Amino acid sequence: MDAFADKLGRVGAWCGQNKYLGSIKNAFQNFMPATIAGAIGVLWTNVLVNDNVVNGNAQGLGGIFKPIMALAPINEVFAAIQFCTISCISIGIVMLVAQEIGEANGETGAFPAVLGFMAWAVVTPTAHSVTGLASSLTNAAGDAISIGDVLTKGGVADLTKVGTFTGFNGDYLGATGLFTALIVGILALEIYGMFRKMDALKIKMPEQVPPGVSRAFEVLIPTFLTLVVVGTIGWLVHMTTGQYFNDLIKTVIQQPLVDIIGDNIVAVMFMYVLISLFWLVGIHGNNMLSAVKEPIFRPMLYANTAIFTEGKTIALTPDIKAHGYYTMNLTMMQMFAEWGGSGVTLGLVIAIFIFSKREDNRAIATLSIVPGLFNINETVTFGIPLVLNPILGIPFILAPVACIFVGWLLVTIGFCPPIVIEVPWTMPPLLLGFLATGGSIMGAVSQIIVIALSTVIYIPFLIAYEKYQNKQAAAAE
Image 1 (cartoon, rainbow, N blue to C red):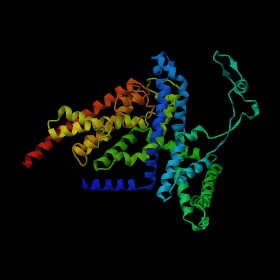
Image 2 (tube, rainbow, N blue to C red):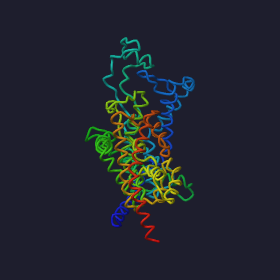
Image 3 (cartoon, one colour):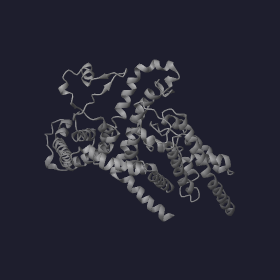
Image 4 (cartoon, helix red, strand yellow):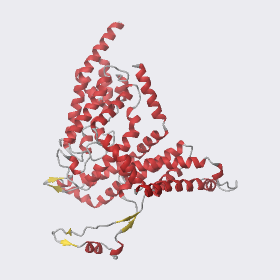
C-alpha cells in the first residue's frame, strides 16, 4: 500500500508542477464565473421567461405562469450574456491560458493575454463565402418565397455580394474551438518567451524614456516575430492539408478524443477510478485530472446547451443522439459522480446516520452534512478518514463509478433528459439535477436514484469498518 501510494504521489506531484497542465486548469477555473453567468442567461431565456409549447408541453415557466412573460423584452440582454460567455469561450480561454504561460515564463502585466488573442486571431479565418443558398423557402403560410425577396427585404441591396462576409465563424469562437485556443495560447507564449530571451531582439531606449514606452519597444520585435511564426504555421497547415488550423485541430485531436474518451462510459468510469485513487493517497483527484476533463467534456456540455437554446424539444427518448445531444458532459459527471464531493461521500454520511453505532463517526457525519450538501467533503474524507483506508477506500472507488454508470444508463434510456446547462459545482443535489436538465423534475429524480445507490454501496463497508474500529479499541484497552 505504501509503495502504491508513493507512486501515485509522485504522479500527482508531477501533474501539480507541470506548467501546461497547471495553466489549463487555472484558465478554466478563472473563466468559471463567466460560464456560470452564461448559464444563468440560458436559464432565464429558455426556462424562466419562455412560453413555448411543443407537442402540448410547456417548455418554460411562461407556459404555466403567464405573468412572468412581462419580462420577455429583456430576454435580449440575457441572450447577449449567454453569447459573450458560453458562445465566445475560446477567446476567453486562449487569453487566460496565454496569461498563465506568460506568468510561468516570468512575464508581468496583461500583455501575454493580448498576445494570446492576437495569435489565435492570426490562424483563424475571417473571410468566408456562402455557396448553394437554398431557394426553396416557405413563409409561415406555407407559400414559396425566393431567397432574393428575403435578402432584399432584410436590407441587402446588392445580391452579387451576398456570397462573402467577413468575421469570425461562431464555431471557432465557441466550445468547438477550445483545443485550438489551448494549443495556440501555449504555443504562442512559448515562442514569445524564446524570442524574449534573445538580447539582440530587444530595442533599447534611453533611460529618460518612460518605463511603459521602453517596455513597449522592448517587446515589439518578439511580438512581431511570434505572430509571424504562428501565422506561418497556420498558413502552412492550410496550404498542405486544405484545412485551416482550427479545423485540423478539431478533426485530428478534439473530435477523436471526444469520441474515444468523452462519449465512452468505460473510459469515464476508469477516469473516476483514477480520481478516487489520487484522493486515497491524499491528493485532490479532480484537480489532477481537470486539465484533461475540461477540454474534452466542456465542449460536449456546450454543444447540448446550443441545441437547448435553439428551442428543440428534449423528448424522453432512448436515442437522444438522434437529436444531436451528448450523453456525457462536464455537468453530467458532476450531477451523477461528484455530488456530495469526490467519492459521492454524502452517501457515506447518510449511511452513518442510519447504521452507525459509534459516536465518533456520527459526530464527523454531523459536521459533514452541511458541507456535503454543497459538494464539499474534506471533513469526511480526512475526518473518518478515507485517506489510506483499505476498507472504506473500496466503496470510495466503487460508488462514483457505479453512479456514473447508472446516470449514463438513465440518460441513454430516456429516463433522465440530457444535461444541458452548467451549474455551480456547489449547487446542492436534486436542485442541481433539476437545473442541469433545463428545469426537469426527472433530473432531480435521477439524482435521488444515485444517492440511494451510493448509500447502499457504503453500508456494508461502513459496518465492516466499525467492527474493525471496535476491535482496535478493544485491543488498545
